[in-house]
Length: 203
Image (cartoon, rainbow, N blue to C red; front, side):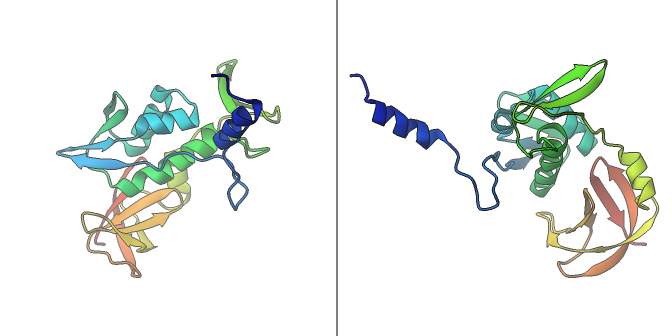
C-alpha cells in the first residue's frame, strides 16, 4: 500500500528534533558506565559516537588520553583499564564536543574533520566556516593555574563519588578528596594528575 503525501510528511516531521528551551536542537546520549573488576565499561560508547558523527577510534584515543590509561573498543562498548567514576565521562565528552564537533561560529554540530597540510581542521557544513582544532595542553594549563603535583590547593566539595570520596571541580579538572563532604571547603595536596582527573591527599 502506497502511503499518502500527508502520511509521509507527518513521519518526516516526527524525525525532526525540536529545538530545546535554550535554542539547541541537537543532543547526544549521556554516557553510562559501570565498573567491572579492575575495568570501567562505557556501555553506550557506540551510541555516543553515532550521535557525534565522529570516528570511534578518534573519540577513544581522546578519552584514553584524558583518563591517562589504556583500553579498547569491544563492540558497542569501550573498556578502560582502572576504576573511573561515572561522573567523569560527561565533562570529558562535553570538552570533546566543544573541540571537535561544535562550530565556533554558528554553534551547530554539522561539521566534519579534515587535514590541511597536517593541520587538523573543523569545517562547518552549515555556515561554511572552518578553523584549526584546538589541541589541549594539559601540562601547560596545569602549570599556569597552579595545578601541579605536590602543590596545595583549596577546593569546594560539590558531591560524593560512589566510593565515598568528595568530588570538586577546578576548571576542566575533576578533583577527588578522600573523606570530603558536599559543602566543605578544604585544602589538599595534589598527589597525581591523570588526564583531567586530580587525586589528592591531606597536606
